[in-house]
Length: 339
Image (cartoon, rainbow, N blue to C red; front, side, top):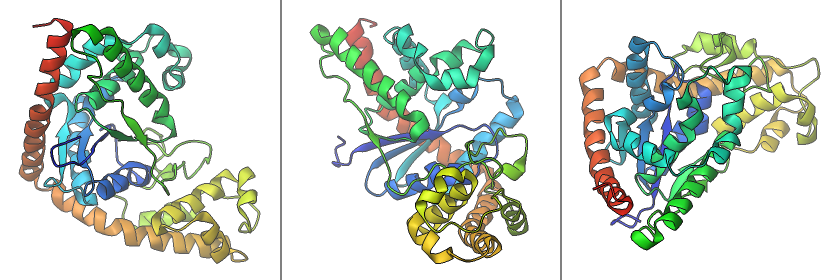
């Protein structure tokens, strides 16, 4: 726990393409709400991004875009530490140490690697395989107490906890006993997993070839209306109960988006639109999206135009992150005999 008695929260977003509604509702919106009550570190995880090949110019631009989005959505650099992962070399240094502590069997159980590698696992980068060890380093480098996680990251946090415990046990006789605090998942109520507008079984993704599958933070109002009007539903009328959503993934997704933006339950939204036309619901959803996202888009474009301000924020954030992490890495190296 920090000197000001605030618990530490760590999280990050990959700079791998245009940020979208899923990034906002699933992560960044929550980052904003957490920063008042927690000592918050919000990273742009560019080292994770290069586990698959990135166009260097696009990667540089995307890093600045994520930083701009953090700021436009309301993350305050006075309340939070905003920084780029690769600018703090202790992340990579601790990741190597964790490569030597984590077990092959643990990594073999990571379902996300299997999903991303598919049948091509012999040809993907070794970085994609050891990615969870770097994620553990990100979290434990700052002795984070809490990590906001979605369903797809719970397994990685469990691995982080295993690594922390193994380090504590392996070096218990050398000053490592209880060195790492064991981070807990921070499950945020009302945080929905946002799916593709064209396929309710797939997560909304920056990498999908069609931009019609997602609402991007830079989409103008007309484009938002177009994407929602063309979002897949089904021939049935608006649902009258939660039970009906079990077999209607696309409708459930649109209701989840409405629920998350309005901060009301899905049941309340169903009751409001029960018996109405889908066209009425989609118009209301478009209006709600525009009311929430238009101010963010305008602020995002304004901030992006001021590159020197963004770089100052990231430079100050890196300074604070290095200051926080240097003490930890020095103690770790001393415990394991590296100087």
